[in-house]
Length: 232
Image (tube, rainbow, N blue to C red):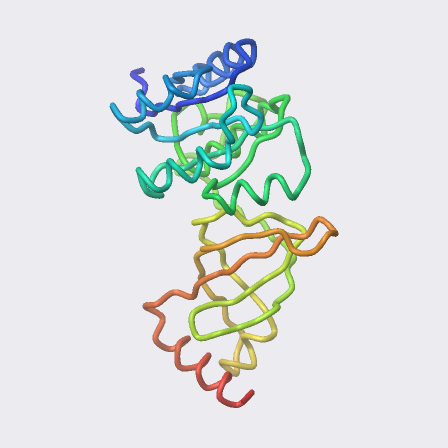
């Protein structure tokens, strides 16, 4: 089978690069691993990969946060960026996401979690078959729903501001359910949103997210404006 997806990884640890390349190869993904920022930048100028992995603790004087912002400024937001770190400090992870990263992966790599993260952005036969202990799905696949708790902080005409113990990745689609939406519509309903901004909320390990409403949902727009006018 030919490889369809390419991942660029920037990490100054040669041992980690070898492990990462071997794991990605088993996932049916081609990995190009770089230990120097200059080489990494040159390769990016030649062609963009399907996904980028960047270590948060580079040792050649370059701030990973600055590099993420540089990539976003030069190449836009099409290519997902995942930060890799042995640090689980929420503030560090949140700052990387604020700078333009989509998600994070902790070292040492957990194969199942790593595969799950990758499947959010790319697909391969190997990843979909999940050669890591997951049972194969029936032909055609099986739908699954992951429910995460969150608290509504604020609503405006464009979207909704949430706080949650769970980090919602930027540019991910999220379906929201709440009793609040019942009061808008007079009946149960779900709302489809796009996560456009994330941040760390307070000092208790909670994350904030701003979720934009579907602009094509005209009925929702009317309901939100009506509800907001009643609150003023």
